[in-house]
Length: 329
Image 1 (cartoon, helix red, strand yellow):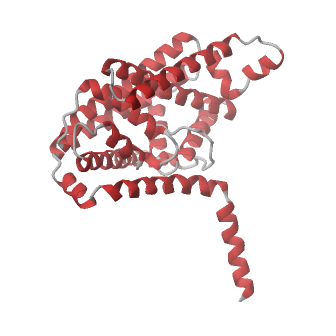
Image 2 (tube, rainbow, N blue to C red; image 1 turned 60 degrees about the horizontal axis):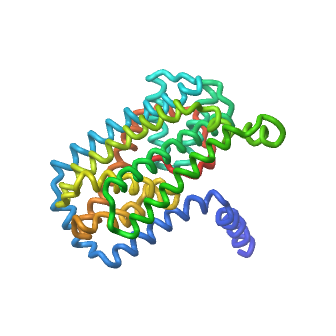
């Protein structure tokens, strides 16, 4: 009997001490904790009633258009990024790659990134570390696009809220530091320690890319996220909210930035908390919460369904993990 308990403890201990286990469990725990906290103050029955009273004839078509349009643009954004680094990808292969990662990333984001990197190595001959740098660059463009959109939106909105003003200063500071980082990286001398730093695979792509490449890729990523702003403008009306377009130009990038933080899977909890803060002047807590939960759930489910249509292409792909610190939106 004692030997059985010992064997059980030996199996449980590695599971609990495994870093990958905690990396998966902690975001789920954070998400659950935030949702429990929110529902402590918001009546879950009234939230359910708000969901039942929502006009799905407005919401469903708008979310379907969003998913299709953003899938097409997301595929184009990825292919355009690779093309600028001389790794051309056909539209067919780009759709397959993006579709497969949609399926896998809804389950485990890091594994989905591993699939992207594996594909680049197998089909385009891109070394693993080089492809990791390319995906880091792609995610960097994503974050830059959202920060620039938030800055523009907040300047147009001229918010009276101290929180939003502080966010504007933070985003401006981030954008300036990010720009200085790229300038310094580009101007580092190509010798000695500076050359070793410049040749690091995670940094190399940032100084290799000409400013024109940054401009083009940022433009396309902003076009991608512009669809989310239009979607929010239409979809919130299904939940009895009338939010001005000017406000959404500022708010939506902030919401998407919060969702991108790797602290809650799919943005569950963080997205709803952010919407409750930003949308408080435009609807009841129940309507905002109902919209937030419907949004995150529908995006996750519809992307998964797109991924399922590419499931046959998963065979032979790896299940390895790549540590990228940002989630994709």
